[in-house]
Image 1 (cartoon, rainbow, N blue to C red):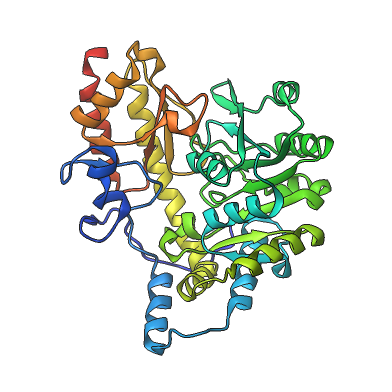
Image 2: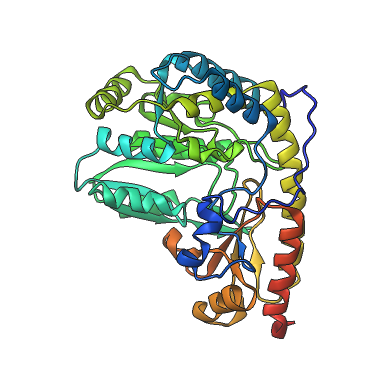
Length: 399
């Protein structure tokens, strides 16, 4: 859905040196991934390398001009902007009164686990999936219940029959990733409805992380869970944020929308007990992002990322033994190295040492990710092209 009429000028090809800017992705690449700078290409953490949108820069300048960083108002206006965005971009009539501002979306997931589960409860995730789901569940003292996705026609599918056969009765929550990270799968409405029916049948709370919902490529449409399955509103938690779309994770603001009043009261009690409130910069940037000018910037971004996607998929397809899952959304490429005949230790050595690329390791995403690596394409096209050339050289003996 396209609501943008504003005209913008943006150059996503502009080279930007992030070294020395306190960028986790670049300044900690060597320490965390083992790929040394300055020759390494950071393609791991899901963070983009583009300059911030002008609408965000202007909002930040306006905040500086006021020279007031004390207690503030305006959270209600920000929530109205969130509701406008969800309605105009996704067709979802989100209620601002049902929204909570958390200290980042990861914090929102953690708060949900504290609000709706107890230590020892089991939490279902469909793996491979965003690795922090596993981390957050375990750090909360809950038990991870993995439901492996199956591959059909080159893309992931849920196997709800297998999941049902494996249930212990201790499961309380499903955490779902829509669109899917790491593979960029855009779930069909009927798949979402089937999952909703499963949760209703087994009295499970459904937490839908839809942080990548704006980054969907032509030919695919993201459907928010409240639209796909309105009959499970009484057990649905919606997790969204402008942070991934606009690359403002540092502003630490997530949005948890809870349509059901009973669930909303429980979450509000946790928020009050822990004194969770949003920060000023997060409110200002989110409100600025969710605007017609922000929409125009996102439209331009998706077009650019689609070009990066094509270069990446074409490059991977030219290397025997490597298979990239079709990218329907996100800027994350998910590549299977199983058919190279190599052990993953050798694959990772070639990618990190020979190609000097820092990817995310597939095994960290849970069962089914063991033979995969994830590559972040949210960078200048020249970097994607260089990475493809390096990968082709590193696996040149497979040609």
